[in-house]
Image (cartoon, rainbow, N blue to C red; front, side, top):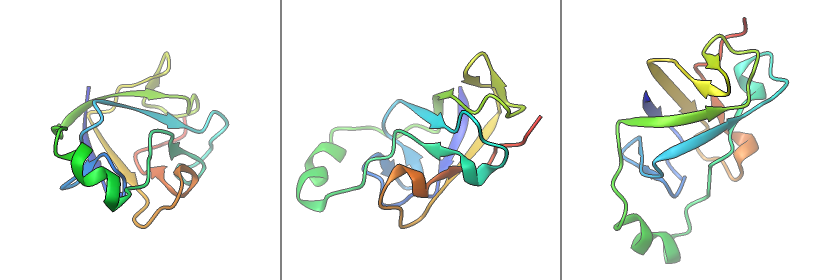
Length: 106
């Protein structure tokens, strides 16, 4: 489990830069830099719907992260083993506009 900070403030799971999803998937199987990764778990917040569902979720500072970015030094058998992970993408409209800022190529 990694300590996660999420800068994607318009994601439905983001509550005060913490994630309320419970686990996330970082995509980018062929990524060679952080901009080629993404948070595949991103879901854009829709105010008419998410105001209710977010109130039922509890954000967590630590989270399980599955990771397809096999060239990252923090990837161990498709799991992220970094102590701290930063997800960026403020204002993202889809998952491809997000990225794992912690990615570092082997």
